Image 1: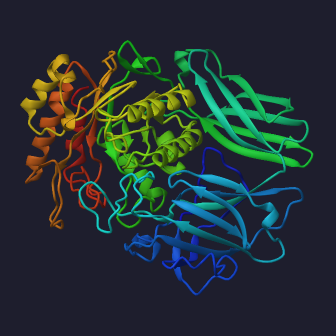
Image 2: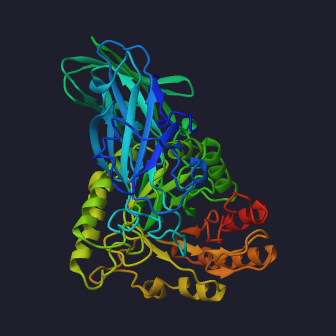
Image 3: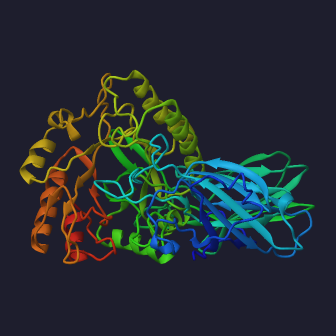
Length: 579
């Protein structure tokens, strides 16, 4: 059972964890609504939430196709506080969910990768047990919904893995006063050493007092109390003398400094208390260089798919998250490209506090249609809004390898959609880099990124020694830039390469983009793909494929169980050889 508060960057003291053992049923005949299972749940299996039924951790471990799922459990509430509201929070459910409280329909939600909330106060009982019931539809054959690496067949193969259906992130209740802070938005300015905070207030019915206290290592840096009268308030808080080198508290992977924040929203009905944090960090592209806090910064990333042997897309616990981040940093990488996955907020919290750069990438659909566009546009906006405040996130990747837009060369409509995703992302967040279509067939983009699995050192050295040769290359036998788009001196990064298969003694099957036969061979091959990229005067960052093996893919630096295939210090020496 995952027990930790699931949203550490916006934490309240009064909450009830609804993870644990639930009743669970497949509804292959789709009888549940007609028979009102939300009122009288049938005899059922048991499942451990928040683990998908396909995973071992769920206690079911069934990988067959079951389109409709039902979940049910009872829960008690603490003593009711007069005028307080009770908010149901759901980390992520894949894909379409209908939620019922005590037999009453609460809402329908579509989107398998991002959180949502609902005020359920009016449906709760404080004198008897409450029930929560979910009907979930996840159609494995629907390739117009954002699927990421979840396969539409029962058995994994190629680059696709076991599906994650139903609840796969934490569900919890929290109590708030009638008027409360729904969310905040942080915009740091390292030039003036200030933080702009936007406060979004829910159920504002009269004047309220808002107190903000900002601390750094238990020292109060700023404290303000203001009266507010509307549902949005904005304030700039200065954090001391700008650019004071003796007190450089900027956030970097090497020095992940975080400011702690406490908010108190006081009204006659009660005080909403929230604990939070932020980092002072700027990411930018200037004169063709990637800049972190106004200084050139070489990105050494590793592709991280975020799958686990026992629990698939859901991390088993915080220890597993921390282990992945610490192993990544120990090998010399300063960031990850979270491939085709929107991570849970506890992962981003640990990336913030431990110092790991994150590229956040939208899981792809695999057919272009009006439905696909609607699904991607809706969920991607929710992703950006939820994760905007994390200093670890430096780049948004709305599309990957033309998945979901397979005919960019011949379909102006697909090009318009690709452009729309880029410009929408920049409109929602102009403080980060946006990669329009990672790998090839770029439109408007902040970085020119290339996927190249060539294994020969001399081939890579020739290809990346000359800018003209780079721009004429055909990664994946695709154009680097869509027709009508020109290279505008964006930083060039190789964001997939390597993928060297090295099976361990217990692995009979598996694949990669090239194959090593021994630890020594593996290290030689690893050096052969890193050296020419580091030697190129035009390549400003890399992302190695990949952190771990995943199911049938055995091209990780670590096994699926997170065991290093060769000594970590040897990998680190290669990864850091350009310093």
